[in-house]
Image (tube, rainbow, N blue to C red; front, side):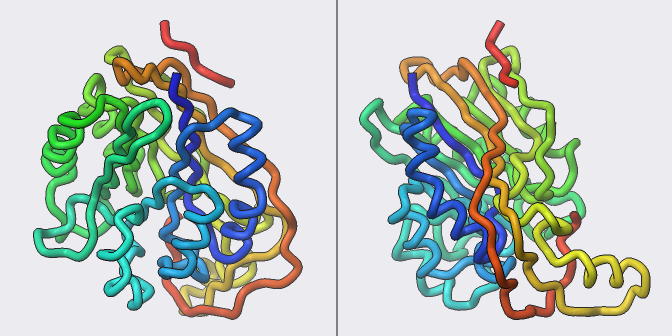
Length: 283
């Protein structure tokens, strides 16, 4: 059995510090073979840098996925081609830097990871996510049947549709982007584990990881304002997936919600637009 830990969107310094501090113990606790972390909000809540990517990989992360904020830190344009374990959505137009999928070797065989971004209420310039991920799955399945897809999207309907579309073709489809963990973990009839959103690794006393006051005032006044990353108690939310490495079928999916260390100080204010914000056995 192959055990994969998937952690949702890492928000700013509090989120990434908590992941780095807790990951080794979590991997030991759950006997994890492979770890996937969505890092697209890891740099001050918006984007990711090369240094942050390297820090996460050194802490024990196997693959870092991303989404619509992947290019927000400009240095990533020159870094992403040098680090194949940092993924950008596979449905970016041809010629975009980086890669949308990867296959890595583990002690229990190869694992494929695919990153795809939805289009509803997001960036319409991206290619059709259904066709793009279908092509990527066909390539990855030439090497392994154990495949996890990070579906980065705004709407539950599009993420569920992608999950159903991929049922029986991949091991798991885990949603990211909304920062709110959903309670719909299940295994589809074809053997694909699904969770609409993994949630976030970030401060709990916040609005999607941001300081509460500025976000509230934005809704009240409709005026632009900086949205700093919040401080305080951090939770690490995600999913644990157990896979039959011989068939690629999911055997179990369980939501995870782990405590992280507290952060005393918020990060410097960064002016941005708001990002909108048990266990299931196979039968």
